[in-house]
Length: 110
Image (cartoon, rainbow, N blue to C red):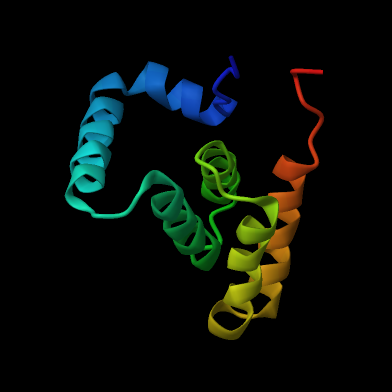
């Protein structure tokens, strides 16, 4: 079973503000239940939003989750490439770098 990766900054947030983390988690669950997308599509959409926001941590997280829900590496990279005409070339290139840092990272399963 693959262990869920949680960045240190997020773990510290959970420890310091557990009630806020729980409220945010409940909001995320409510929104997820309201949408009609399957998990794979939902994660690709969230990845696209994260790319547009230039949110490195969210990009990395949603890459991991999209892959876990059946997205391919090509599909994940296609999200960043699609950002070129909407968000700009520098944003898309940065996103490709963040994506590759997840995709090309050594696996703990090896």
